[in-house]
Image 1 (cartoon, rainbow, N blue to C red):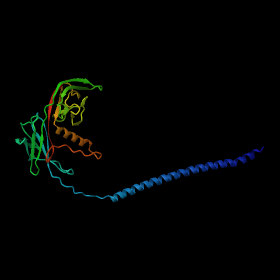
Image 2 (image 1 turned 30 degrees about the vertical axis):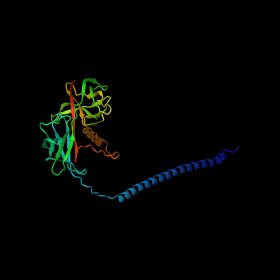
Image 3 (image 1 turned 180 degrees about the horizontal axis):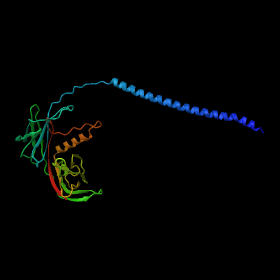
Image 4 (image 1 turned 180 degrees about the vertical axis):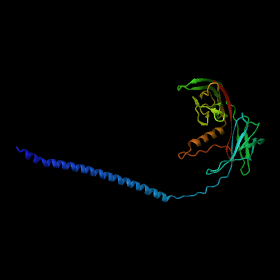
Length: 325
C-alpha cells in the first residue's frame, strides 16, 4: 500500500490533465463562436454591399424617356338615363386627356335634340353647368329615341335608346320580422313575370325620406337589401341592386327580399325597375372598372352607345310600392 502522500502526488497530474482539457474545450467553444460571429457579420456586410452596389448600378442604368403621346380629338361626353316618370335630363361635357389635371369642361352652348326616326321632336334647354332639360316633355315606354348633340369645335354625337315596359310584378306582400341579432327587417314577397325570348334586366332599391341634421334638407335614405333564391344580385351601383333573367328567362317567379327597417310609421319606398340592355351593360362595366381594374387584370372598357362621343343614353322603367309598418 502506498503512503497517503504519494497517492495524492500520483493523482495530481490527472487533475491537471482534466483541467487542461476542460480549459481547452472552453477555449475552442469561444473560438468557434467568435469565428461563426465573424462569418455571419462578413456575410451580412457582403449582402449590404451587394444591395448598395445593385442600387447604384440600377440608378446609373436608369434612363428617363419622354414620350410624345398623340393628342386625341376632343369629343362630347353625353350622359342621359331617362325614365317615363321623369322629364328629359341630359348632361353634356367635354372629353380630356387622362393626364390632364384641369376640371372637366361642362359644355354650355350645345344643341341637344330629341328625334324619332328622322322626325325632330324638340330641343332641350340649357339650365346651367352643362345640364339640358325639357320642362314638360317626358319619354314614353317602348319608343326608340335618337339623341343628337352638337357644339362648336366638336363632331356631332348621337345615340339611340329606349325605356322598357314597366316590370310585370304582382302578389306583393310585406311584413315586419325580427332578425337573430335582435334588429328588425321588412320581408317583401312579390311575383315577377319575365318576358320570354328577350334578354331582360332589372334592379331593385328601397329608401325612405329623411331630413339632414345639419341643414334640414330632405333627402332619400337608401336601405340595405338581401336576396333569397332563385335570384342573386350580380352587381350594385350605389344602392341599386342589379340582376338579369339568365336563370329565370320567361318564368313567373316569386321573389323574397329582406329590406332594412326605416322605423315606426315611416313610409318605405320599394322600387322594381326594368332596365334596357345598354343601361345594364353600362353599369356592369362601370362597376367592374371601378372595383377590379389593376395591374393584374385586363383593363375594362366602359360600355358606351354614343357615336362619335362618349357616355350613355339609355332608359329604365320603375314600379314603386309604398310600405308602412
